[in-house]
Length: 107
Image (cartoon, rainbow, N blue to C red; front, side):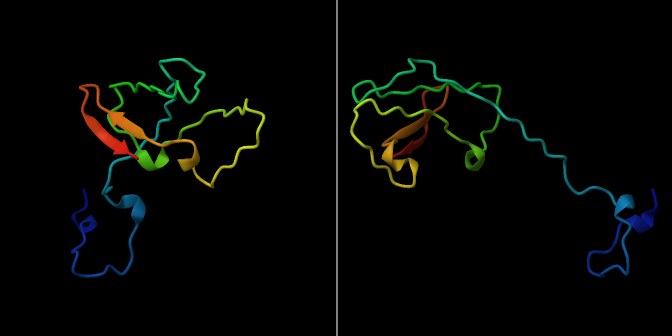
């Protein structure tokens, strides 16, 4: 390897051939994963616990890029009002590890 490829960090180079530079990071990959509920699929005010088990083989959950998708059906016949967020539908959410430890407890 050409020793001139390693540039002194205190001096700005006159020019750089990026195709000949040593990479400074690892290649990143993004993988989409779909989880479904493990309990019933119809929920009411009395039956309102949703369990979504996540595979332990997934080493990292990317919180900012995680989404909850569901279909809301209004069976009451009365108009429903929602704010511009999920706070109208979700009052409390817990993320629990496979060992039963609370990782997140959001109210």
